[in-house]
Image 1 (tube, rainbow, N blue to C red):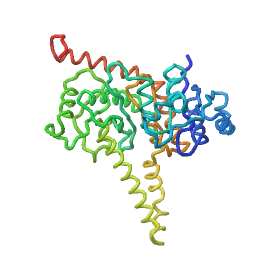
Image 2: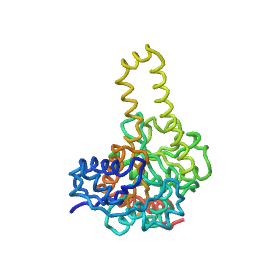
Image 3: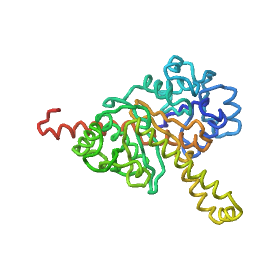
Image 4: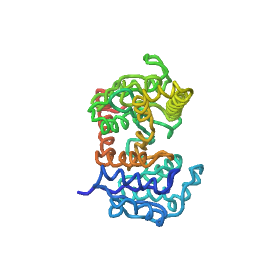
Length: 351
């Protein structure tokens, strides 16, 4: 059976249609069974496809000239959900004409349109924005929520943990990913009431396809000691921006240091293999593709500044989640959580 198409908002992003189409073409080399629905200005898309014969026969164009602005408020964008390239890409998922949507456009608008069109899965109160981040370990770490929900209660955090673990099993191949809650300390007594309650529920639940290992502090997120970091969107977005800012600071500092003198320039030539490895590890294009977990469909957010390589990574994420049936995995884990809660009561009655 053929796999569903991926709808790509060709108008999203800072570098234009050519970059988006080039990225989709790169991704199709790895996922050549997928077809694409390219949403945007037909003439510009057709010109971009001229350089990618492998995409021309595998792509359908849905003409649309209206684009969501990067600074446009979500409430404004929602009014044009049926006329913009972003909205039509999401609508294709809703109608079953595509299995996933990918956009590098306005994050708030993408979240609002996705929630309205696709709704949340049964058992999920709020969708969460999850992304991969590099670590010193063998696998990337998945972190959620990264800004979709600024305030979360214990129930939300438990649901995020389940969704993040399901995503991690696809990415890492681990049967029981290590899951931790972001906190101001690792002691059991630390944290807000909501974080404490979420930890208690995750500790009590048995049979879930995860290994809940308590709390993690922000400075340990990238150490490779956990596979999934769970937090509310307010704290998660701050932590993400701090990590990204620190990475840019380090690379800019190294660049400045290596160009400060002739001796430094010679030192750069000697250490170039190591600095190239660092640059590759910190390049956001190598980890591009944040996912809105918990919706009745797959929606992937690409960085607006992503290169063709970055867009390809975002499309690859969408393809892999479809191949590995992410939404079905989350549904199964939610059902297991319900059974676990019944077992905890000991009498077959829910609390």
